[in-house]
Length: 96
Image (cartoon, rainbow, N blue to C red):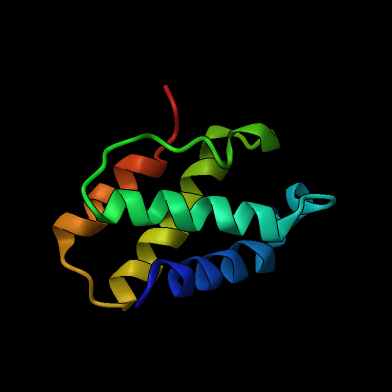
């Protein structure tokens, strides 16, 4: 699965989530998607740069964790190795 495919599946899950979808109203999903694809590609390639793509949406910590859990689920279903999934989780985890 390519980062582009993973992000497309990931965003579909987030958009379908009744609690999270209101935060995406007015958001340029194409631009967000492009940003997330680049960030995920970097994370899966071993670059441990934290991503702030979700940061400006006003999500609570619990909501942000759910967004990241959706990504982990997508990557797990794609049967990526656990080490690569952990890299992606770290890149998108809730900022502290």
